[in-house]
Image 1 (cartoon, rainbow, N blue to C red):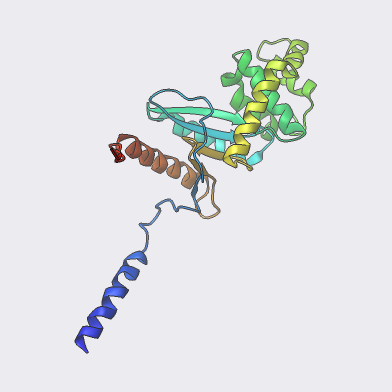
Image 2 (cartoon, rainbow, N blue to C red; image 1 turned 90 degrees about the vertical axis):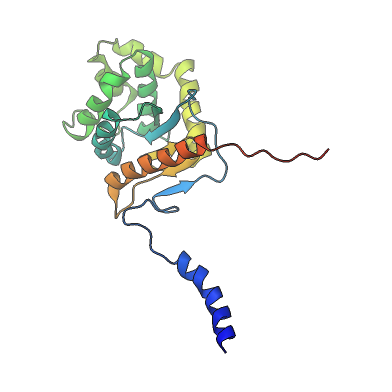
Length: 226
């Protein structure tokens, strides 16, 4: 009888270990983040750095809200991180704003104009989320660029290629909503209703620590037959 009881307990113990609750606030796999089925090439690799991409749109009110969290995080961003904005190239104004983003990068005004564009749309309401190319160029003209030349740049081959690169990246990583964070081409993060954007930022730090540990781990050698 005692022997049967011990055998039964031996089956129950592993199950009870699995059922132990996670530490409060710990990021949850499959909820706070997903591991991509196949690692994808990073958007703009930098040797020795972990890439963190925010897929966003200027037409997205959630991205506008998230921006304050991103700004605060970037002030203390680790030196081994390469942070990149990748505009989502959808349809209508989403594509137009993405074109404006890449034209602004070419003119080296994107960094100065980024927060200001969110503010113009969602705070000052000087620009519609459905703005035309001409209206978007009008906004950027306040940063010292010629409006007509900026429109021409937005529809140029150069910007077409960069917009297509964004489109391909979001398709490969499954970033089909905004804002989405992609880390190292391996992990996809979205905000959850219960933890919001604050939780999303904590998950970014959690995944970065996970990726650093993986990078430092010794590589296992596979045995070869002679």
